[in-house]
Every structure is written in structure tokens, then in C-alpha cells.
Image 1 (tube, rainbow, N blue to C red):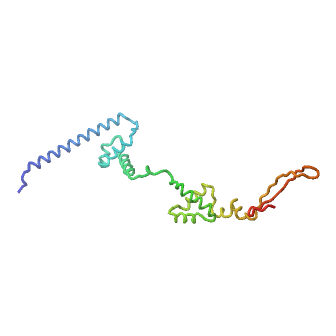
Image 2 (image 1 turned 60 degrees about the vertical axis):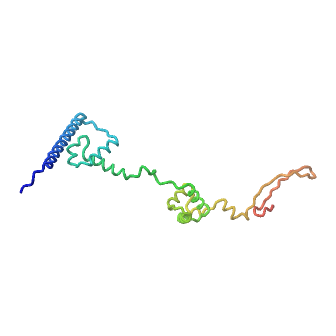
Length: 209
């Protein structure tokens, strides 16, 4: 027994076919319009804004490459799809929020690194790094080396071999004497005479020789 005739299905089918045909006519017109615009422009290169690229790329992604080949005239399908890939990549790109180069170490921590190196001349980069970690500051050995170099402080072996003037004074304080001289006028049998007095003073005991 044949299926009963359904008027509603017939109407829907006719309407669907008419809409598809109407849509195709619109596409054909826009395609031809784009071709004419392309002919008017000739070899002149079109310049697009970032917003225009985004809009075209978003629309292009909804179509297949074969359809794009039929309708796209001002930009090639490959370019449109490349724009879309770039659009997706930029969504997850956080480079705009990053500052160039490595972040600078906090000034307070940098001062602490310099102080540790000066007060502990035998401490190398790893030893300073460990001491900083105990205080809650995490710095790499390379960062510490960069900080010390920026402040003109040599690595531990060179620092340990060289003695600062302050260290020399503190180590030999009991063996160092200061010297000076002064003049004094003295009455003698021949009259007033000037004598030059040279003296030495031991720094540790303040005793004058």
C-alpha cells in the first residue's frame, strides 16, 4: 500500500528547495560582485585592519575550503584560514602581559645578596643561594652571580684571596703606629730656638713614643 500523501511534508519540501535556491542566488550575486570589485582594483594590494582580518577569518572558518575557493576573491582561502589560526593563537598568547626580559630582582633582596658576599668573603654563589633560601628568597646561582658582577664584587675565590683595607687594619691593629711631628719654641742660652718633635703613637694602646 503506498504511503498517504502528506500536504505538510510537500509544503516543507517545496519551501526548503525555494530557500536553498534563493540562498544560492544570493551567493552567486555576491560572488560576481566580488569579482567585479577585484577587476576594478586590478593589481592594487588591499590593506586590511586587524578588525577586518578577524571578521573575515571568523566567517571563513564556517565554510569549507572548496566553498571558499568559489566565493573568496579579495583574499585567498589559504590566507583566510591562516588568519583564523593566528586569531586562535592570539587568544591564548599571554606575551602582551609579559615584560621583556627576565624580571629584575627585588632591590631589598639584591642588597641582601651584596651584604652576604661582603661580610662572608668565602661564600660562593651556592652558599649565598642556600642562605637566601633559608630566609624565604629563591634565587638561582646565575642570578646571584649577575647581581655581584653588577656591584663589582668578584667571585668567592678572588674575594677570599684579597684583603680589604678595613680587614688589614683590624688584623694588625695592635702592630700599627701612627706618626706625626710638631714644632716647639724653647728658650736656650743662645736665645729662643725652635725644635721639631717627631713622635709615634701605638694605635692599640695609645702610648706615645
